[in-house]
Image (tube, rainbow, N blue to C red; front, side, top):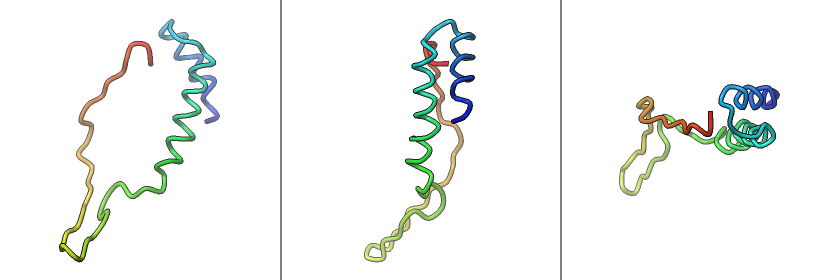
Length: 74
């Protein structure tokens, strides 16, 4: 979160697009709110077990499936 202002300035300088203040807000949102929303979530390994049906839900990383970076959002 401490780097949100310098990163926003660099993104605008590099791309020539966007408004620094808007990018600061976006960087803050991504680094604080999104992180905190998922930091305690179980995302790998055994996620759940259902003894009634005898099933186990297991998650494992498969790597990057797709990456899209719009030209207006470096």
